[in-house]
Length: 284
Image 1 (cartoon, rainbow, N blue to C red):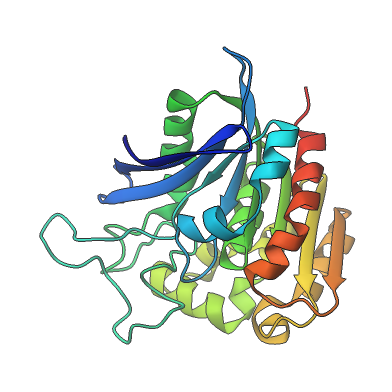
Image 2 (spheres, helix red, strand yellow):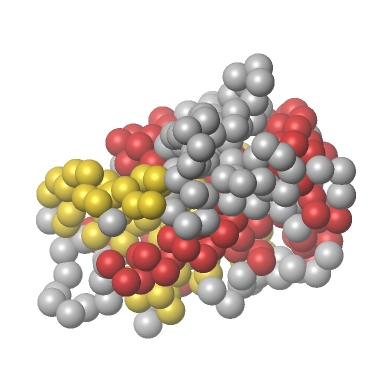
């Protein structure tokens, strides 16, 4: 693991790191904030998954999470959203032929692709759920028995599906403006079809609403959604998650925040409340 940069912030250290990923076959970059802590102490970990077009840098630079993480003693980890750079043959990592923002580079959708040309490198599910957690546990003062997960938009989709798939691992799951039912909206249909093919059963394993319909359970979910979000009605559709949770008996704290859009102005406003909610569930 290579240290790209480290900066002191709120008494802790904000770092950016790079390593060669076995899952993706490329170098991957991620950021980690470690608050000030007693020598030898192990701290709970909050995972943050970013949205379309983003890298680790968006939340690291604009998420305004460090003060709350320092107050609550939380390690904050932000992976990238897709593999990047040249592959082993010197060819560019597969991108959408049209250069679309919602598929290919920066749009891994937190799945392990099975369709060419993406199957070789687009292994974001394995990277986020297996490889990177092992690295974090080894390299940082992380208590891997106390983890939670959150995300935004495409990353909200990832946080919900991963949290629902590993309820024994993640004590809390929350999201900002998540894609809750990718199998029912254009963003998700394009991505799941392109990465996973026509097998709709494979799609359901990466669809929060479908996972709940198929029996996945967590005690509670926290979701904030901007009421002025330009993607609300077509791509996000939180009412589908609300209906699924109501039928399954999952406590859903869904708040439509009037006037807020899809940007980091929205995310940074409600980030402290989400981190407090996570911290309460990561105690002990």
